[in-house]
Length: 169
Image (cartoon, rainbow, N blue to C red; front, side):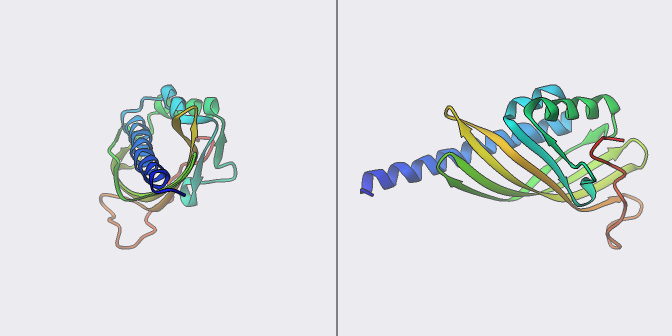
């Protein structure tokens, strides 16, 4: 590989990392602001949303852009978390041509409709794909580290079963 090709490859990787951040940030905002259906636009046509750990269940994966969008629309209507604010940290992004992997830690103070003030910590382990020059989420994995009420704290984690299932019940 020539020096110029090497520079172009490195520049593409840096620009791709930036573009991936610009895909992940709208996902977080959609979760926090209960945007619902438009979230499907940032997933690949065959994209997957998967809950891991206590966020999982028997059918923890939602497959396809439309199905993921519907899942978030249902969550918006259900109003299970009327207030949420995700904070992403410990970002790692690895680009390999038109595919990429990333991991983010998150911290999320929230209000649960049945439990009141809760605190959630977890991680996203995601795959991304570039289609026609644009990056999309290919497979998002959301895994809990702990979920606890404000009253109970997190020193005795795991604090709470989430009560969340893949079907949203």
